[in-house]
Length: 543
Image (cartoon, rainbow, N blue to C red; front, side):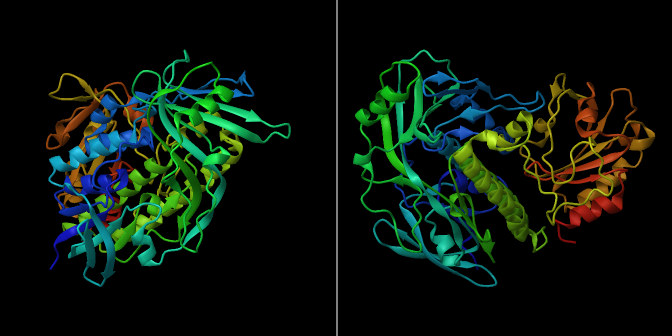
C-alpha cells in the first residue's frame, strides 16, 4: 500500500513543474523541500520560448508573461568598443519570444498553480534516505525538529539539485569537471541610458586574445534593474576548493557575499556608460561545473534538472532544460498511475532526455569558451537551438518512424509540433492558434484532409484511436475552408482559413498527426490509416 503515487524531493522550478504536471492530471503526489521558504534570489532568470510553450500547455504562461520582461537582444562591448548588436529574432510562427523572470517569481507562479490543483510544498522537510523494491519506494523524511517519518510511494523523483541525495543514493555517476573561474552575482539597479530589454556583455581581452575581465548584465523587472555577473576579486576567492570524490563545485557559495563596492569596482572598469549601482537586493559568489549522470533513473527512481546535469549558464539553458525534463517524465508517470500506460513507458525518459542533457552540456561549454559563434550553423538555426525549439526525439521508443521522410515535408515524428494561426471553430467568431487547442490537453490527434473524400474515414479513425488510448485522447479534424464537413460531423472541425496549418505541416492529402502531452509529434501518418496509428499509440498505451 502506498501513501502517495509520486514523491518529489526538491521544490525549485523543476520539482514544482513535476508536481504541477502530476496534480493537474489528478495524480496524488507529495512535494518536499528542506528550505523554510522560497529564496528571494534572482538566480536563473532566462526563460526560453520553448519553456513558455510548455507553460502554455500547463496553463501558466499568462501569469509568467505578466511578471516577466522581454529579452530583445544583447549589446556587446570589447575593450570599450561597441560590437554589432544581437537581436533575438525568431520566425513569426513561433508564439513566444525570449523573456527574463527572476527565479523566485518562476517558483511563485508554479507553486500557486500546483496549490490550485491540491499540491502544496511540505517545507522544512528533507529526504534523507530511500530504498526501492519491485512495487514501490520507501523514503525517510526528516523535519527541522528532527522527527523522521516513512513515506511509501510508487515513484520518487529527485529534483534536489547539484548535490542530490537521490543521485548519490542511486549510485549514478556524475562525470565532468569544474571551471577554474569564480563569479559574483548581484541584483542591482543602475542609472545608465542603454536601451531596455537588452542584456549587456562587456569584456576586456588581453594582448593574447584571452578574456581577463567580464561583466554580464541581464535585465530584470523594474527600472534599470539587472542581474549582473562578473569575475571574483582575489579578496573573495576561497582559500580551499571543494574536494573529495563526491564534491561538486557548482552553485552559490555561502558566507562570501560581495558588497556593493565589489560590484561598483567592476562596473567602473567595464560599464559602457559611467553609472552607479544601487539598491542591491542580493549578491553571492558562485562556481560552475559541467557534469552529466550516466542514466536519468533506476527502476522507480529518477533524477531531473541539476540533479542530472550541470553546466555553464551560457544561454540560460539549465533551468529550462530541467523544466522540460520534469514535463517529459511527469506525463508518463501520470499514465502509469492511472493504469493506461505500458509498464515500459517511464524508461523512455532516459532515452529521450539524456541525449538532450548531453548536447546542452557540450554546447554551453563551447559557448562559454568561444562564444555562440563557435557553432557552425547559420544564425537562424543557432537562434532556434538557443530557444530550445529544435529539441526532438526521432530515435525515441515512443516515436513511430516516418517511412517516407522528404526534405521540406514539415515536422517529422519526434519534432516539436509547430504552432500556426487562422484556425476557425464553427461556433467561435475569432481565429484560434493551434497551441490554443493543445492547452491543458494530453494526447491530441489532428486529422487533416484537403477534400471531402479524404475525410470520409476520419470518424472511424478517431474512434479507433480513442479506444487505443483508453479515452485519453482528443481528436480535431482540420479542413480547408471550402471542403464540405458533412462526413465528419461527429468530430470537432477547424477551418484552416489562412492555409497556415497546411503550410506549416506540409499536409497533402489525408494525414494524421499524433501530438504528445509535451507538444512533440509521436507520429505522422500519411495517408492516414488505422493500423499505423494504432501501432503508434501502442508505444505508449497498454493493450
